[in-house]
Length: 144
Image (cartoon, rainbow, N blue to C red; front, side, top):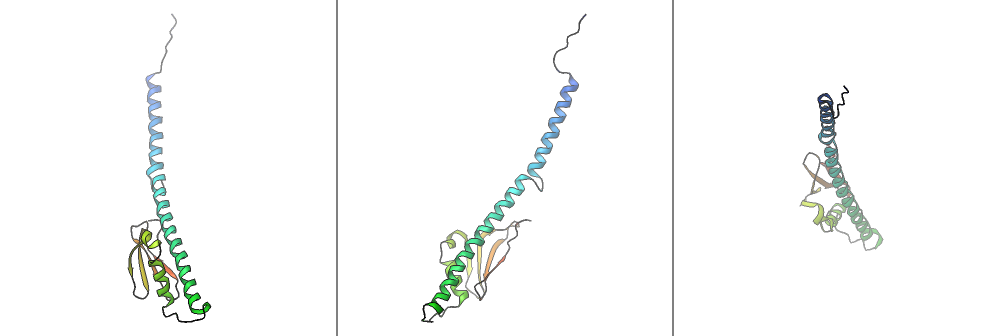
């Protein structure tokens, strides 16, 4: 008698299920591990937000520095009474980036601006303008 067995055996089915479980485990690990796709995506978001804020602040600060030196030296009237630090601070707080990035400000010396951008640890990105108009950043960690 000829024995024609068709279909899959129980052993083949168990092996297939085990392989699928291993693949599912590897996929979950790739998505959610410390170096997983989801974690790296959130780090990229933080990095982008910090870079955008820094770029916007630096651009506006450069405009403020230019205005300060233009009014002090180029226009010839030399009636500039505000300091470079105050000019840059005013330029940033009165610009369009203020509504996008600025959370709170302090006009004390050195001028400090707390942004609404958080670093990877959740701390607010803070810009401090020194007397030369240079911006120093605190809480700008890209990763935890």
